[in-house]
Length: 392
Image 1 (cartoon, rainbow, N blue to C red):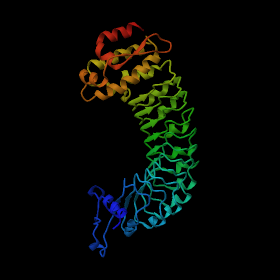
Image 2: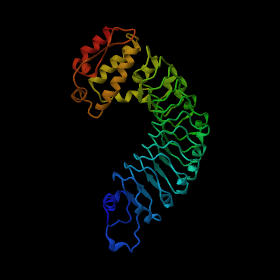
Image 3: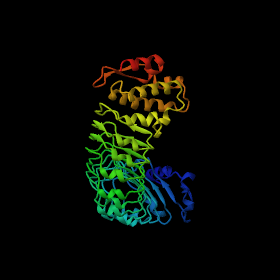
Image 4: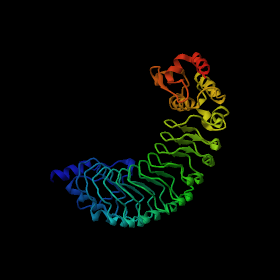
């Protein structure tokens, strides 16, 4: 047996976690027996080609893992494995996805991330049972029309690609629950996306949006929305139609105004607004925290003295006693740091997580007041909150 075959057999690890039916034994005495293998894992084996031994199990093979190798192409024989339900080939050197992929009619999960693949073949539509596609970190510039015929697709990951637009009939993928399109070149979304009534997580961060797409207001099941690192200038009130939204990241945009109707997001727990151009916040934002009208107030519970200081600061915000931009930065910073201490609610725990007290020396626009760092608030206690109000 040559060295390559020995290496391949050593890499062939079968685990009970992946529901192994049989185990491949590197022994010639078993060659005459037909073994039943459902899972093969050749990950991290420094392979340049798909091992030929795989094709001995084309009738029974259901999962194949070829992660993190140097494979440049997928051989035609591989697509005779028609029982295959999961094909995982991330972090290789693939430059294309063969049209023979259409033969894998039982495929449920496909991972081709971190390759050099430029497009999907039109006949990907023949893999009609596909429910999960991970194709992030590939130079994919567009999706073929056939892609929108994958009607069982529930999760699609296409982060860090070259997408400039989505197919007009993208809304046909009505079973989508998770859609991640971060780090592309998208400027708009197709109107047909209003049909994605089951989607609950949508990541459009680091694209080229200048306004929030109107179609988002119709995604009533949406729970998590990332729109960070775009060029959006306004947070529109109609977004309040998303009653189930719990997480909204609008940081690193160019937002100058938040419409007051945003308070209609009754379930909102996380609202990230850092690194924008805000000079004021609507009173309704303060009300969401102060009155408990939304879940945003829940993160204050169990915080003891620290929660009281935040309540004082929020009261000052409501009374407009100091710059609203400063208040926005204050809230965003504290939401991140204090969220780590919810389990204990102790000052000691918060202090140990935050570190050395200090002050952000960058003045808030329109105000001479400095935004305090969390450690500074913890160490200074009630005296700080009184000074915070006095400077207003």
